[in-house]
Image (cartoon, rainbow, N blue to C red):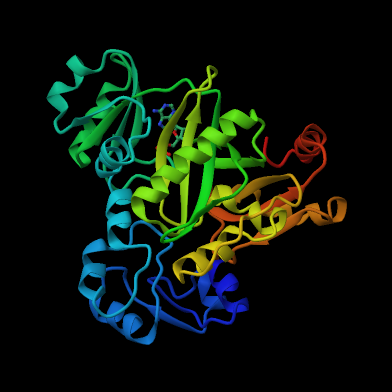
Amino acid sequence: MMAIAAQYMGHKVITLDPNPNCSAAKVSDELIVAPYDDVENLLRLAYACDVITYEFENVSAKALHEIEGCVRIPQGIRLLEITQNRRFEKEFLTNEAKVNVAPWQLVDSAEKLPEIITRKQVLKTTTGGYDGHGQVVLNADENLSAAKSLTELSECVLEDFISFEREISVIISGNGHEYVVFPLAENEHRENILHQTISPARISAEITENAYKIATSIAEKLELSGVLCVEMFLTADGQIYVNELAPRPHNSGHFTIEACDFNQFDLHIKGILGEDLPEPKLLKAAIMLNVLGQHVEAVKNLNHEHSDWHQHDYGKADAKHNRKMGHVTILTNDFDQTINEIKATKIWD
Ligand code: AMP
């Protein structure tokens, strides 16, 4: 989707990906098939390009340091290092950006666990976690053995479980000195995987403004170029906790493709190129649903009854259970009615 945005703006796109059948292969001028830490091939990419962008936080930061003198990497390597490691991320959010995060502490060995788990908490590995992998919810002694195994994998952070009312995210784009936000997204996760995004989020203007301010202060500290997603928890009494950062266009911003005048991919490309950034406008409210492997067959039949729902297929070969295969965006004048229509399909039950 990022490549498509770059292409229509007239840029050439070369993609480096270990998978020859990756989604971007179909929309790139050239594909370099190589691991993300293959310095020789990264150098090939660097010499062929004016600007490099990453859209996956497990790209090797070490390898990017090897090529940084040869090409512009506007998002920066530090942002990648921060978002690759929950400890660095929390330290940055707490000490530099000075935003609210769930109270947390570092755990480097299993022995200490029984004495430090005093309430409902979440243990997360500092590296390698995604979509709920590498984390476990703990309540006193419950799940202690799963927690012990996590600490054997890597250093962990132990954070308070936040009884949130809603999960929200701000997609923000920067060009190094100015920052624009997309309409606030309200997210529902199932099994820790994003299931649905509603925008604009059904919360007050005041809390929406607070969420934008938090995201903007993070972007300013980073002198952000390109898109950043700031995922947050919102509690019933209006408190916001920053949960996680993604240094790239994000699944919870996919609704912007149809719902906004400029989408997150457009403003990522403009941002990394240092162009002036328009304030993106919401043209119509939207609900986005992820299409996972188990939904693919049923979604194919939607077109007859719901020809006005926008279906996106990422062209991935294997429709595995819980693998993100595409998404559907529904523009709407009435969230409740659309939610009922979604329920009636029984696809996402
Ligand atoms: P993460 O990988 O940190 O984005 O976590 C995945 C999902 O787990 C989040 O979107 C939340 O639904 C849930 N979660 C993570 N951390 C917490 C927490 N401290 N309190 C409550 N729920 C959490």
